[in-house]
Amino acid sequence: MNLVILAAGKNTRLDTGIPKSLVNLNGETLMSRHIRIFKSHGVKKFCIISGYGSDKLEEALPELKGTHNTDITILHNERFDLENGFSVFRAKEWVEKNKMSDFFLTMGDHVFDPEFVEEFVKKSSGLENTLQLAVDMPGESNNHIDIDDVTKVLVDEEGFIKSISKTIPEYNRYDTGLFRLKSEVFDVFQRSFDQKEYTISESVSKLIDSREAKSVLVEGFTWNDVDNPDDLQSTKDLMDQKRL
Image (cartoon, helix red, strand yellow):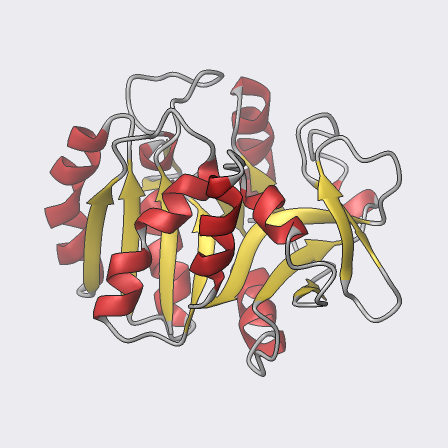
């Protein structure tokens, strides 16, 4: 198993002078936390997609490799001004070079309870669709989530995704920012780019009609998206409460 971590964003809402993935919480950066947790659940190779502040990630690489004793590659996305789908596509050469049939994908500024990751790894193991997305049910366990910023998902009774966006009026799940993808997903991203569509959600939408985009419900565990100062504080609070 292998993981792509997107860490190319411009940090417009939480600019500390470093990539958000290098923010230190409880003595550990978000990036180091990702590598520790995913390695413990069987991930062997990691690919970090850098953009804004790429020099800081390069500087952190020797320590990350030394701490975790694992295979970590950094690829730079020069077009980090575009949306996150373009950063996913930057990993195509790494996936092809390592002859991967599938891979995990997550965001460098997201935080997961280790049990959340364990549950998704188990539930997504029989990958039959091009894309599987870890989703959560809106409720008390995730009432810290920024409802205006979270990507919302509408799924049917079988878990197939019917629509996905931050602005859809009807939804029954939250996108948690953790995916398992077949390597052929890059063809879908290319079709999106041809139409000047650069978000991950826009590429997911292209898989809906063929029923190749499926949700995996992972509920009862904590996760968060550290996108702004309020998110950073809520993540600190969740850690103090031993929920992360």
